Image (tube, rainbow, N blue to C red; front, side, top):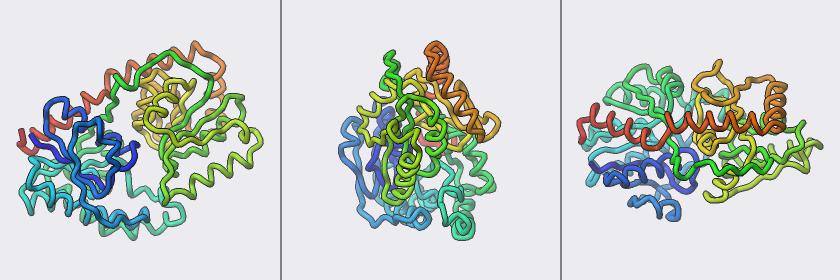
Length: 366
């Protein structure tokens, strides 16, 4: 089987990009030929994946709204490039192009939903007009999903959300997977609280900052700054500057992969205030390192397992964080429970098993 990942860009190791790299690496371990087709790439990210990369340079839209439409056009170009080599495509951006792959090239193409891109809260001031502006794309994507045999989503809850937009089709939940040989406990505990991820409004870092205002521990926010969301990064900095309790205790870092791993393995508590009802990669990585996690409970528990769940009540966050910071025994107990859960349900091996089995079942590619 020759598997091609098609993605908009591959320049940072976070979120979707990390998922693509890790699944490609695991497929390569299984001697499955894998290539990544993208419009732009940081070659340094793929040296250890044993994965070839084909680059087709295109102009990328920077607007969080306009790039939805450019994603489809870019995906079609990349599918054309992959069609002479691949047996199956995993389409990580530009969902509506999946039907084009089947129709134009007779090439099985499985789109993968990594997040709810239609969530109006992700667009700031543009939020009110997003449902209108994206309506044509929703219609095209819905038709696409009904036409093709299979699509993936990174959790049951995201699959449910996307079914609300797509109105049909086979959407299979694929568990996010962690390399537990890399993300593993070391026993280190250096007394600081950590949040990681893109500096993006979806990560809701403001809540974590406010929760940490009544503790004495240092808070580190380790993230990636994207130009189109630089306003959010500056908003967080302003919040820290304007809050005397935080001013001398918060560090903003932009670490490389090894530095990020070191931070996760050395922190005392990991905060995940993102408003989603499933566990993201950053949270699962901390859990794999046996760190206690406080996570936002967006849907009465949702798919949040082996973490401390808190809702909109700031006092809940402050109480939970204060307790964990002060009691190492509780931290260790929750951390070990988290580790066991990841090793059981969220390894990269299980992720690839589910993907390959579904591809063989629904597309006939062996």
